[in-house]
Length: 153
Image (cartoon, rainbow, N blue to C red):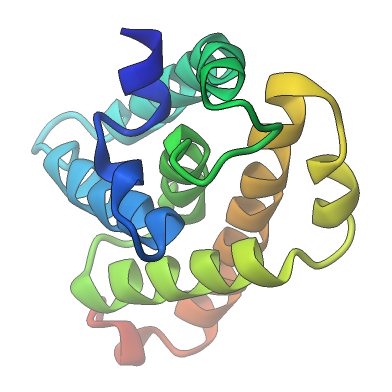
């Protein structure tokens, strides 16, 4: 079970761009958490994803024989959720959150690259959480300064 959680229930096994595939699945999961009357649900799922990542990543990394193997995408799920928390729920915001998270996850601006070097699950999870923070902060500014561009006015 831990292995399947770490690999995003298999979404990380796509042969091309498994991180992007994991992020795309996470967008779908995020959208499913946007239920009327439950504004806190995405935050609860985010915390569950982080905990599940720290719990499942060591087993999957050991089984796959690498420090941070591509098929492990639970970190992308958590980072993608973080990129979208406390933002308006419109398709333009979700699309921009996806694009920005992927950009920051791939480029790994400081200190993300340093966090990636940490041992075990911490190194697997931390760089994606930093990417999620960067994407979220940039989107927070963007939706406040140009709200009409995001379908939220």
